[in-house]
Amino acid sequence: MTTATAPKHLILADGDFGPMTSKTANSIIRYQADRVVAVLDRGHAGRTAHDVLGFGGGIPVVGSMAEGLALGATSVLIGIAPTGGRLPDAWREWLREALVGGCDIVSGLHTFLNDDPILAEAARIGGRTITDIRRPPADLPVAGGLAKQLEPLVVLTVGTDCNVGKMTAQLQLVRGLNKRGMRTRFVATGQTGIMIEGWGIGVDAVVADFIAGAAERITVQGAEGADVVLVEGQGSINHPGYSGVTLGLLHGSCPDAMILCHQASREYIGDYRKASWLRIPPLSEYVEVYERIAGMVHPSKVVGIAMNTYDMTDDEARAACERAAAETGLPCTDPVRFDPAPLYEAIEQAAHQKRARRAT
View 1 (cartoon, rainbow, N blue to C red):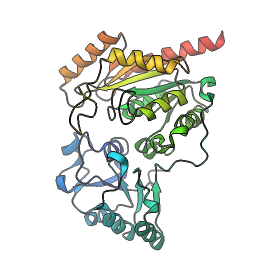
View 2 (view 1 turned 60 degrees about the horizontal axis):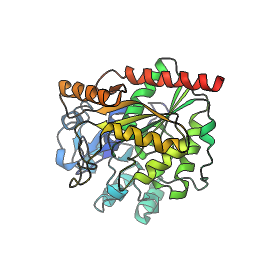
View 3 (view 1 turned 90 degrees about the vertical axis):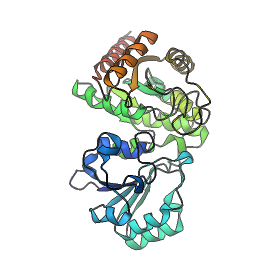
């Protein structure tokens, strides 16, 4: 799809537009800003995306669906991922208004909007489409270890928590690796990555028995014509709510290498949403645990640390990266804020080592 024919999004993030509470909105604004006409959030109406996020330029924040439609939106994109992925009741009328007003809808919610009779009827009458990104394919297999045999280097991002930058790190790396002459593909496993990349499977909506099979399928698909496959990670292996998805990805994609992602200022799992109760262990423990669990199916090493330092000063961010590198013995950088080269080099070295192993 060319930019000329691409949809113009009004991003719906009412009540949650912010650096840590609107991951989907933020990523679309960071990587596809030219496709965004406005963000709908009554709490920040009258401001710009840059005012709220620190990036995004002059994309306006509006307070009503009518204002967004007036700016030329052709698509309404759900820009938040609330706990459980359910549609807020107050949004149903807004979405019906958008469909009647000539917009398609793109949703990454667990609530499938095509199954809503009011919205489905509005779409039918208006000739509009509703795309439920998270709806999985119906023919997913149980994983069979196919990804173990792939020739390209498979790299999975793993994390210390949800929403620490696993997808963002991969998107920062894919561009740079391709520029360095390594044919690199990004494999999307969550709703935001799918919206950006245009394909993938939202593994957190897959029946548990088939999570690893879904990861295997898209990893194999991503390997076609590639030197490096960057698989988007989800959750954390010790997250009480989402560790099952993390494990399914780990064993389905059979990564040769992993990038550990962490938000430097975060001390507790989920502390940006609810009361703190589970402290994040040291990074060195995560390295050991991820390598051990991955290695029970396919040998894998953590080769670098991607640090999220969005809420720190430059000096604080550099110090956090230096501490992580000293603790783990691995290269560490914030690939958004600083030079991603240490992670490029770690991946290139891992790819060279895999080629050497296969040759012998």
